[in-house]
Length: 415
Image (tube, rainbow, N blue to C red; front, side, top):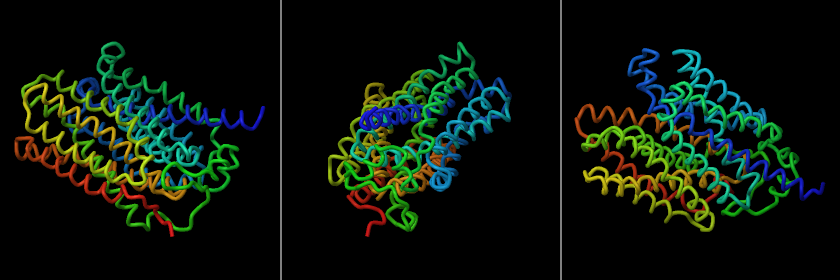
């Protein structure tokens, strides 16, 4: 077998592994909200406790994302990824079959497993596919968005046949497939030059120019990205986007119902908002990596998001609400892809990308976890959705402003 054939098989295997991992990074949790009433009735838990089922994974994302880069340096990227899939499988088993305690413990384990994938995949893409950052980020975010929407859409119908436990447990199938896929790549290590030794493809990647304004180098850097103000700015940008995402996912169905529509229609808008992101998840990273600066893209996304939320606030007829939600859904997919692409393009090497990703996603998901409760509390105090939607519009404009900075072609910690 020639070296070229080995490289092709290695890269093909890595593509499959990234896709299978992406399938698992939202699907196990996006369907939970639709099943809360069934879970409450079956396990006899309070509403406040049931509400934590969607919050616990987000808190786990925020709490553990910060440490994934260090774990990757110490134990190796491949082993951390492998362990994350194992944690997810244990969490899925616990959540469905170990009663009330297992329900919450399993949600935590699932969140921990997802956190590792969230952080590591952008760095792995930068390391293994330096000439295809846009294409691979598109593939990764599209896979993630597609299965997030599918999960939200099929959880209730599946529960009618399998019960809520079976509906949630079905995601063990892609998690197990991802675990198996990671076994051949368990020696992958982005922290040192040993990553390049893991495959001739990686060695070649280390010497190749990137498709954005960076070049990959798989060596450990002396300066931490945590010392860069721009890194924290990128993290805050991701946090602002995550607050909009978390706020709309939590409340768009209820907001639609408050305009006189039934529960089924509200649920349609929730799933529709998620699934629309697939379209822009495909195109945004590819466009971004073909431009020297991404400011116009980011500002445009934030501005459109503002008008989408404004439409949800102003309109009360179904066609207009669908148009407004379409704008928001397309912007959501673009925001996710924009964020993940920036994490790769603004880092000097794969290890810096992992550290930046950990920082950004830790802050991002912490802010995302705050948004639903914050907006819900404001609604309780005011009795209308005016102020909560006003906050989301402000966040959209803030995101547009931040995009003007993070979209510029700088490299963190580059002298």
